[in-house]
Image (cartoon, rainbow, N blue to C red; front, side, top):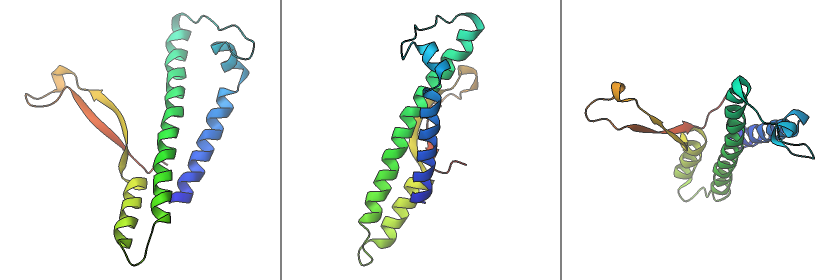
Amino acid sequence: MIAEWQGKIANATENLLALDDTVVLKRIEGRSGFTALMLSGSTAARVTPALAAMRELFDQIGTLSELVEKAVRLRRSLNRLWKYDETLLEIKLLLRGPSIPLPAIHTPLAERSLVSASQNQRARAGHWD
């Protein structure tokens, strides 16, 4: 599982870096000698959230990398005589369980019950396909 995740992280990082290095993105953001474009209207409405989502993906890849590194450290600490099964279970839960915190989802008032919270905390399970 660890090797699989390391491969997925490497691919995602490579793809994000390739996207970040495109001339179009450099022109929009004003990098590499370009002047930043002033977006407006429907272009701004579509491009601005997409750029923000891409930056968020960079952050999430970092979080995921840290999680996998923790699994690597746990794997290295395995001892067949002491807590072997517990450590393997912890690694599995890190890589397959809901271990990546996500931003809370706001629940509209009309959809809440009397005792429900206005926001719901979420976590992403480790198995991305």
